[in-house]
Amino acid sequence: MPFSMIPTNASVAYQGYSRRSWLKRSLSALGLMAAGQFRPPGTQAAAQGQSWIAFVSDTHIAADPSKTNHNLNMTENLKKTVRQILAEAIPPKAVLIDGDLALADGQKGDYVQLMKLLAPLSSVGIPIHLALGNHDNRENFREILGDSDLIKSGRVTAIENHHTSDLTIAGLRFLILDSLQRPNFTPGAIGADQAQWLAQTLSNQTDTPTIVYVHHNPDLKTDKALSDTKRLYDAILPSLQVKAVVFGHTHVWNPQGQHEGLKLINIPAVGYPHNPVQPIGWTKFVPIQGGAEVTLSSLDPKHAAHGVTQLLNWR
Ligand SMILES: [Fe+2]
Image (tube, rainbow, N blue to C red):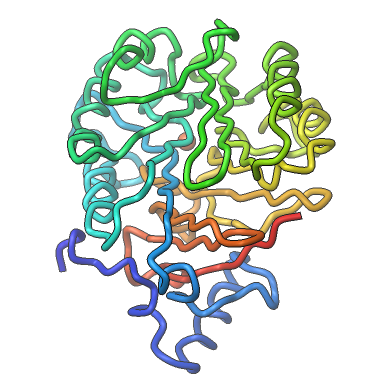
């Protein structure tokens, strides 16, 4: 079946209790869900045709479209992702891509190729917003994409050395951060200036549920992820309107992380997994009253996590 025809409506993947039991066992074995957090897909949000947002991460696009990693072609994977998003019955309010846009160190040609691959989305009016990761180059990104109509970045120029965005989409506020330190250097950082901007920005608008969208995973136990995770938490935890942090970087799918009531949503890579048990694909994020429903669209429809919807309740 061509990928454009793969149904991302999870009801197709969910075909009765025995199927659900199998999925639960499979997902538990993969560490992809915690007990009691499973929800039959195709539920409330999808059934009501509500607004949704596509979360995409770690595309790792190379200037050369034949490049592969882990025997996977990243260009083909992003093409499949775009086709799947466009095949949805209702278009997304936006597509957010969470960094590691480029293959390794953010060559200008990587971003030229990225623009070509995203054009089918922008040509039908779907806004695209981008974060930067450790395999990006901020200067090259800005030179190729910064002023293009393709990328409606909402860039906040007050922080000149970071690419940040402050957006309202489907009733939620998204603050896209920039955790890139330097190209092809693995750990990320928020930094003092960006943390200060974040805290100030949050204090200016406290009544809108807010999602922080950043490439590196917040992890207080290692400095190989977001090296100043405590600084991030200090900036956002007192602002109770912040409901979740969405991140990529690990190439892992796990939407059920938590820190002091804050949801930690680890979205998978599109380009390739570090661990072959992990899915590659994108996430359908549907805001609902008091939370959200998230559904993985794996590029491999046979993956156990494909099409499974999970419920997140906000703090
Ligand atoms: Fe990555």
